Image 1 (tube, rainbow, N blue to C red):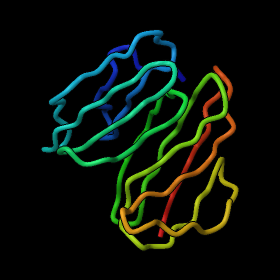
Image 2: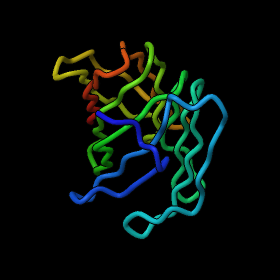
Image 3: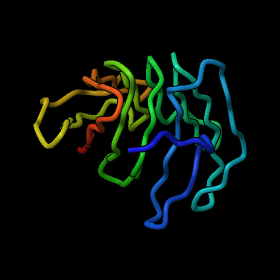
Length: 136
């Protein structure tokens, strides 16, 4: 998987790709349109953050690159790459249980808090993508 050099882009299949964990300085892109919504991405080596219409969607510490990102009524799926293990927080429905899958293996169910945030740790290494699926 490649780093998203343009910070955020639309893919031909309707999915979204964003983030560049190789940057030493913080970079951002605002007002990026995808399927009628406006996205904002901030990314660099220590953090990657995505917002949709001003609302929290994704954050990783340290920074990551994300491809094949898609939100559905049942959850979210994406592939992620980073230089080292990352803590990923997603903005989902509040007070809802989701099952988390990493590379197809279930990590069990996690319930979101009242703000709708769900956090998961993912083991990463540069040059290797990990598939993440979070579903109700």
